[in-house]
Image (cartoon, rainbow, N blue to C red):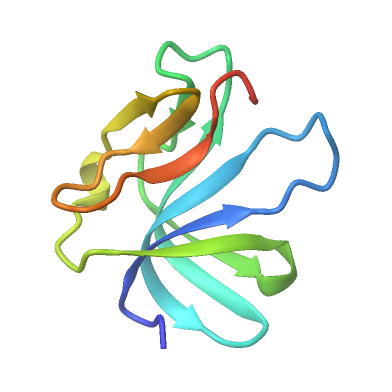
Length: 110
């Protein structure tokens, strides 16, 4: 169903101090138990000027379904190699041209 789609996967937080983390990229494997994303990790952090730390290079990441909070399907032509972040109110979002911005977390949450 999600294989070959561009997605944002937001991970569950298991404790308060855990930094909100998401992955954006192409889904290369999707099963009931796992999703494998070829793309970039994004972690909210107060130490970064733009509010988030984005991986410098893409990689394949396997995520167990039990760790997934939500999955957002992005447009097929979304350029996940050139992520642009912005703010909307108190939320840090990924700019998605011609679509609703993709929320990655609350400002100051990291």
